Length: 177
Image (tube, rainbow, N blue to C red; front, side, top):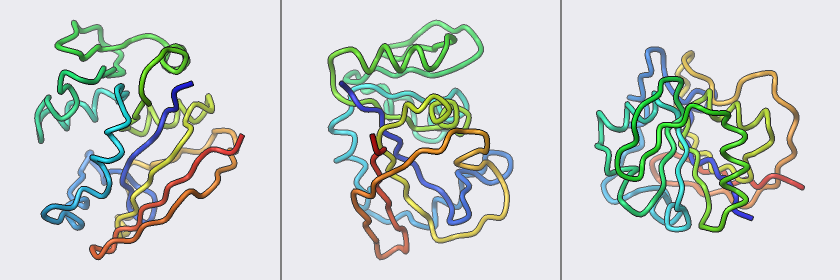
């Protein structure tokens, strides 16, 4: 069965964005030639799930080829019907049904790139198998929390911890069965 993994950065105080979807704090750890294991992680991925706000941000800042490189299926979770483009599907159905269907199909693993609404819906349904969380050494004070209240408790097993000279610490957990 395919696994679904979260690969995301957060501030030390648990925010994935500052107010107004401001991600500028991520620049604190930008370093030429350092991708914090992203290329290695995505080598085992052939499907990406993300929310529309995250998709729109990446489209604006990086470009559509960041997700849709012709080799991966991309599912943008949205409330607004929209025609697909390339290998990108705008999905308006029930997220848990989509993920359970994808997990049952053959293929490489599935990557969730956020945002918070998507992550927390997946957590409520116990659908995230692995967590790769990069902690940026900053306290931003407020914004969009990575984990919301109101989800079931889930036990995790630590797979690894990596530290980088930028001060970023990367935690890799697997859900305990």
